[in-house]
Length: 191
Image (cartoon, helix red, strand yellow):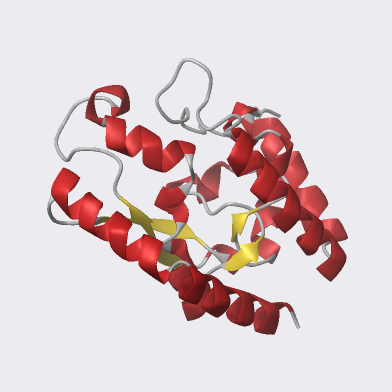
């Protein structure tokens, strides 16, 4: 049922957002040129790698994230528009609308066995951790919320998370970790 819900909602969203997406793509091309999208290998269900697709928010090249992040990129991130291409990942089956956010594959060997439980389900565009603090959370807290979701997931909980996501995006809360342009690296669990 969850997969059918994901497909139907994603197709409806893509249809409803088709004109705004075309406008964003044009503006993206003006701001960055090619490539329009950011691709990165992330860990999916069972730790299986897949390429996530997002709108680019940073200039290519060297330097730290703060130096490469543009005003347009900050706008994309603050409105979560940069995440919209992930709808393609949902259609492909790599992601769900709701689940723990997918993280880079090089984090896989850094999780405790409990934290690794986040990979028991498909990763999501939004999740329980995102509506309860987003990037303002410590890694430890985020993983606890991810595992809580895995243990309590249900259709009604997914609907609640989707509703809370709208509020979180409108409030533009905790888009980045305090004092950083994005978020700090996760180096491993504490024993």
